[in-house]
Image (cartoon, rainbow, N blue to C red; front, side, top):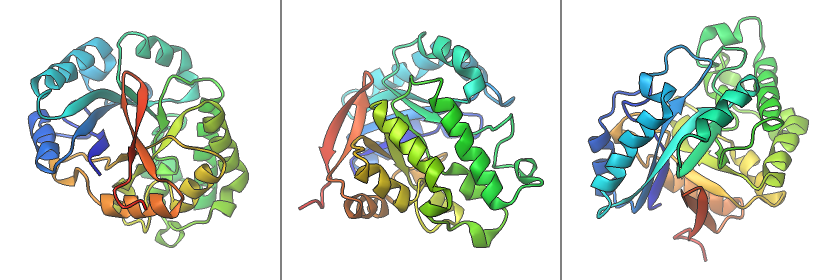
Length: 270
């Protein structure tokens, strides 16, 4: 892969990565494209100032885009927490800056992040995942100003029962069908996110089954991201991501600039 389109820096509340180090690491790994996609979540209290001020964030990342323009094509991106209850504020936020790329993600459900134990209190893994997928459906019904939906089954990374971290599409088929068909009808995409492989999962987020169904239903737009929060994780497990994409019937993946996708052939496609 010659790009990484899900990366975090110290502009995210959960990363301390120096922006120069992140970009130089991508360059050293031979990447031609990258997107810095730092977090913004309205309903979580630990967002840093720049994420609450989109222009300050945009201007900061854009300055690095210019600084490294001769070495790498850097897209100014952001990962938005797109909870349905925040739709009005989200539209106001995205209208303020000409982002190159927007990932829509769900991190908080009723203000609770599945990363933390309190999300799972009183819930089985199945109930927690149903709640999470329902939150995605609610969001898709009221907000569409994103380019790809991020790590669709994110919550499974943090399920408290290790034996249930491997699930089948059929376990949540109605909900997942609704999500994928809605995304496709909106002419949006999904990502293949390798971060779950570093969290003990046996597959990416979303799972290979979800990616295969997305393709079967006619989905074409897919980006590849490591979800790196440190420079060392940039491009991690991208060989696995490529193998999954090929098995799922993809011969291309996407990069974005000015909110428009460009398709790049998978190197091992024949």
